[in-house]
Image: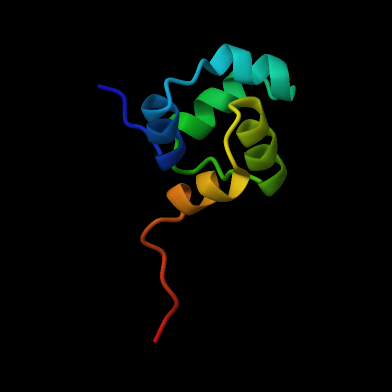
Length: 74
């Protein structure tokens, strides 16, 4: 069973074609797969922006989904 990162879950929720994202963004397929499945793969801001454009979503919406649950320390 494959474990998905928040980005991987977002891709599944939006029925994203990762090969198309790779083609549109210039990110290679391996990098897209790493971002979707490996927690240690850190998503850069420029990658997030390009991916959001490629799947036609607001980058802020995508960022809010990916950062859900993060809170400032009291």
